[in-house]
Length: 463
Image (cartoon, rainbow, N blue to C red; front, side, top):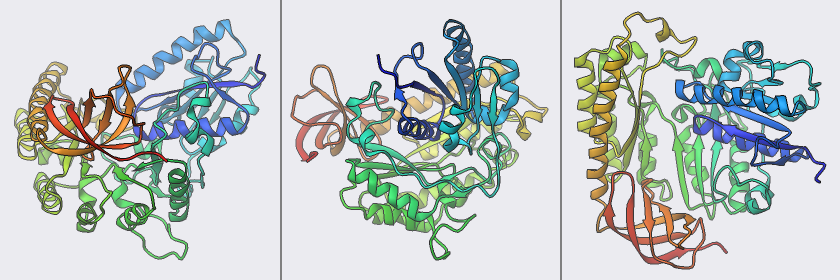
């Protein structure tokens, strides 16, 4: 029997949480822990929570309830809560759920291993300190976890050829519905050197696609010095510097606020060859009245202007968005303006949700809530039309030759890959290739959420 302690991490919510889970997994591995697929057998279970949407928070709380029963059978197991819910509720979680051993906040992530060593099994520990002077630590990925994921007892939380790279944390926008400034703190950008060093390590380890990650990447470098000489440094400069790394095949980023989208950044889509022509640009609502109540600091007119400029720089760019339906005070006329934005922009995809109150936000105290039935009807109508537009947009790819990066080989030796515009492509042909390889295909079929293609040639393979 292996004497090393084991851990299991369950992640809920956004891409930022996925990246945080990877970091926690590496930190524990460096301290002698072994990753386990089964929470019933793990010595430490970490529930990495998200509170941006009610559904993700509810799922995390449900799992914590299950873990109460598991811990009764295995009292030595340590249960930890991380992420936004941990930051938001702190000690209150322990009072509601005494079986939790550790609550660790978003700025305390790198203290995880040390905090676990201090647990005595009798009293809970809470580490949710937050400071406006916080600096994101330098972090170099563990090469063995990237190169040899098959040696782990559990699958890697993300493809070894594709990785997220955090460039900033927190947000200063204070949208009235959003918990991020309260759960992840004020906006702080990582040092350029730390980002570039990490990117080089990733590429040297065989990573071919990097996604730069932050709550609002457009404002990278605006709130603190990020360069060694203290000179001003923009997100566009960072994009160009990362893109210049030899052997990196694809570069993406997320997420952006329309109010901060500059011509300099838009020009990058025309000038940086490996920057994928896909852009997630949350609109949230098509109504100026709702946008004002949301404190989004842009108008529908500005949003549409930015979309037109983007398409002038890169006509084939695929745009996705976020939409909140049923925000307090949203009238039928307001919702019709959101439907009008959908028709005008014709998003390739969207993440749409019914509004839900989030603790501590200004909108939670707004009195003019929209009836749940009305919210459901509006969401259904929006999603139905979006699905139709998805199919219409995907149909435009039929007959085109596109490069896809292979993500997996199916059980029948077919392939699933992704285009630069982020479309999933299914290929039934059997050729010799591996995940991370780029293959040219001709698209012959379009569905609402994916495409089908035939192989033309293999562009490159792992060496």
